[in-house]
Image 1 (cartoon, rainbow, N blue to C red):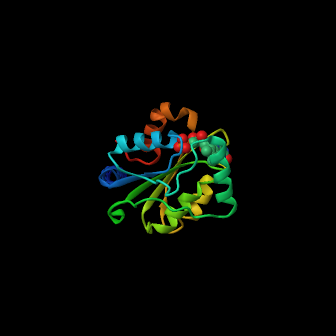
Image 2: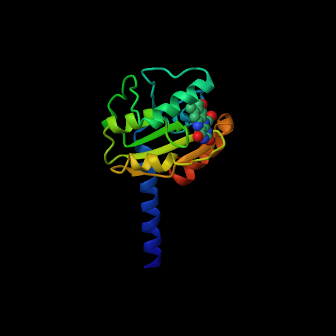
Image 3: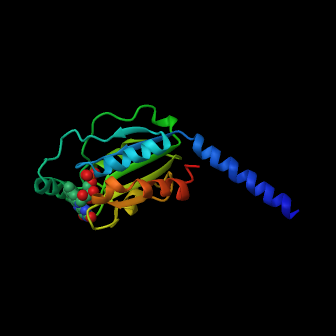
Length: 182
Ligand SMILES: Cc1cc2nc3c(=O)[nH]c(=O)nc-3n(C[C@H](O)[C@H](O)[C@H](O)COP(=O)(O)O)c2cc1C
């Protein structure tokens, strides 16, 4: 009896891991200075996902201080900045990673535009975020609030200055937490 239970558990585990690996994945990201983009491409490479970059219709200033001001104004006015294009065949994806930098303690407002514009109901959505020393702050909580009709899984957080060397951590997260790698 005990042996049968063990065997059943083992078969279930194998089935679950192959099912997850067979899922079609998309990585969506917004990145102003490249850190989040680096993580997005690491995820893409590990799990062979498709990728979509959120490009705001009106580009932010390339000056850090001006961009910080622009982002502050958008947050204060609860803005919904427009972005260019949209992912093709979003309905065909089972798992959607969504990455962004921490801006003023939360997601850049354009992420709210994306999450409100895109029908992700019932899908598995997984956030990842890069920050500049403040950590997660409200980023993942605000992400959760915008994805209540989705299944969410453990997000990935990294200091943006370590993004270029984050590959081992990204791999660990994909393998151990999300079970998306063998
Ligand atoms: C407009 C703006 C606001 C930011 N606000 C925060 C913040 O509140 N907390 C924090 O830790 N880092 C903050 N940062 C730093 C970024 O989160 C960090 O550098 C991130 O890795 C940048 O990602 P990116 O290269 O993908 O744009 C801010 C950066 C910008 C440009």
